[in-house]
Amino acid sequence: MNSNERKWNAHGQAWLKSGLSQKRYCDEHNLALSTFQWWRKRLRDAAGTGTDLIELSRKVTLPDHTASNFEIRTAGIILQAPTNIEPEYFARIIKALETR
Image 1 (tube, rainbow, N blue to C red):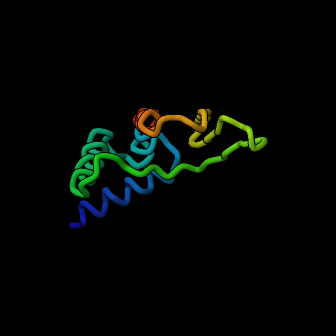
Image 2: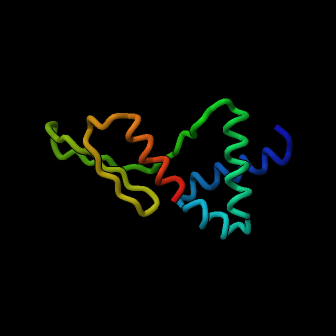
């Protein structure tokens, strides 16, 4: 990884940990959103993955053993879903939230 790739990878990791939207992170770090998104795609493609693992600060609420829903809270978002949610559908929700 060259120095430019390391720089943008570091921004990507910092953004994931920040809990901010991409736009807000870029605004706060004086980065062009389009450039940030281009580098994220380039680094994902170079790694051979089409998606990122997204680090979430989560709170799972299961009041008893018969509970059928869970809750994730991160970056001011509360996501409640059934425990039997299809993984592909869940991934689409996370991807939509990532680009907000």
